[in-house]
Structure formats: C-alpha cells, structure tokens
Length: 368
Image 1 (cartoon, rainbow, N blue to C red):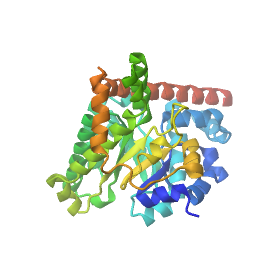
Image 2: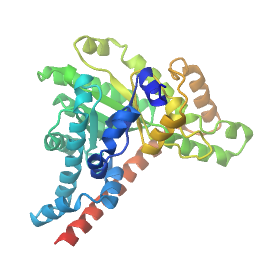
Image 3: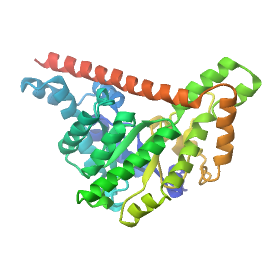
Image 4: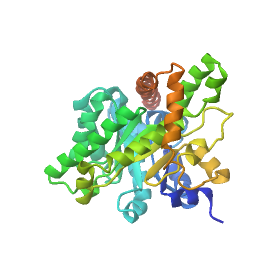
C-alpha cells in the first residue's frame, strides 16, 4: 500500500520535520522517520531548541564541560545546537547527495535578536555555517526589511538560506528578488550557483488564527462562512507568485546557468483550531516544487489518514483571490494582519531565545 506521505512526495512535496533534539538523533527516531515517513529534511528554531534542552537528557555532559571551560551562555547555546544540526546533517547526507542538494537539509536560525540587524546577521550566518561545518546546512534568516539585504549577502557567499517568517505576498515578492540578487552576486564572486539552495518559508496557520479572531468578532453569517480559509488562500497566491517570479527573464537566465528554484516552504502547518481537519495545511497545499515542514503530530496525522488528491494548488488562484477579497470587504486589512504577524513572529522567537539562554544558564550553574 502506498502511504499518504509517499503520495505527498510523489506530488513533488518534500516533507521536512519541524523538530530536532539530541534525544531524537541518538535514539534513532529521526532515522526511523526518514525510513517510514518520507522525511527528507529538518527545520529548527529557538522554540524547538528551548524545548529540547529543557526536556532532553543528553546535553548535561557537554554543557558541564563548556561551563568548566569558561564558555559564555551564548557560546554554549551555539555549541549545543550547532552540534545537533551537524549530527542531523550527517544522517541526511545520503538524501542530500541523492537529490543533488535539493533535500537532505537541516536548518539553523540566526539569533532572533538580530532580525533587524543586517550586518550582524551576515556575520553570524557565516559563523554558523562554519561552526556546523556541513554543506547541507541551511541558515535561517527572517524576512524582515533589514533581513532582505542580509539574505542576498549570505547567498553571495555561496551559503544556502532558509528565509523564514514570511506572511505577506508583498514581502514574499521581495524575498524572491533578494534570492535572485544573491545568486547574481554569488555568480560574480565565482561561486557555482548550482550548489546554492534556498526555501522561502511562508507561514500558514497563524494567518488563519489572526483573521478568524477578527471574523468571529464581526460575527455575521458572511464573516463566519470565511473562517479558516484565508491561510490556505494566501499560500495559494504565494505559489502563483512563485510561478510568475521564476518565469521572468531574470530568473530564467539564472536557471539556465544552473541555478535552483527557491521553493516555497509551508511552515506553521500544525492546525490550531481543533474543529479543523488536522491535515488541512498539508493536503490543501500539496503542489510540485514545495516543502512542507511539519511538527511530528501533523506528520503522523498525515501518515495515518491524510487524503492526498494530487496538486491541490495550481489553478486555485481565482478562488483564493475571492476569499481574500471577501475578507477585506468585511474591513479586515490583510496587510495589517501580516505586518502584525511578522512583528509577533520575531517577538515570539526572541522570547524563546531568552528561555533557551535561561535554560542553559541553569544547566551551567548546576554543573559548576
């Protein structure tokens, strides 16, 4: 029997796990998901690592050694997390090689407090790339206005980038332009652009959460009928934009010289509303040349009962535009929502980063 995750892969969706911990690596859980759930990559973020270090049982020895060596808390955090990412990169190495770098990727994020700091984002991205020491690592950089230039500059160094926290179509268009600019700079710097990969992480469920709250506040039949449609519609229009941007002369020239598509990655795909199908943001966003990064719960739900109908996105654009237009006709500004979500996204990762620092501080203090 062909599993739903295999069917999803057959559509052209790369399944990446939105989770990582040393316990998962050492227990063999990650390898099992690769073998049984069609997982071909991993994404991480400060929230994931805060949870891993808070609940994990395998970090104590390293943290103690770092404390005795006089490492700062930040140094200890980067040592522990980059070691996990390096170990995961090694596990994914066969997939990386088999797919010519398209998959087999593990992402690690620059410190979220740098989200509005172009110069230091570039510095830290290069440091992380060197620290992990694996060419199948991807450096995550948030798609703030200040992050756009950093994305281009990091790509120009031949480093693959996962652009995160994208909510609006306008910002997504700028992200694609930043990617193309980065490839042009990399080419001018003598890099082989065929070795540079990127994904553009477009967040889905958070859009529904915020817009649905506003629809419920309006309370009319028309408003309630639109609940839980905007997130998918917004992502569908992002895919249309992806098709358009990579059909331009600028993009096709780069592609002809060996460059790769910057694939849309659907992030925040865990369903927040229990009234919704728990595979909604997987089945309704299945499309070629995409990545879906799933929490394990969503991955298991997809494997167990996801119904994959092939490409669910191509040709959906007129309906998606109607959904967005109907939401805005009720007085809800999509741009206001996406601006808010970008700010909240950065703020939430900073909170998680500070929690991570606190956890490691506590571990270091207890080992002294």
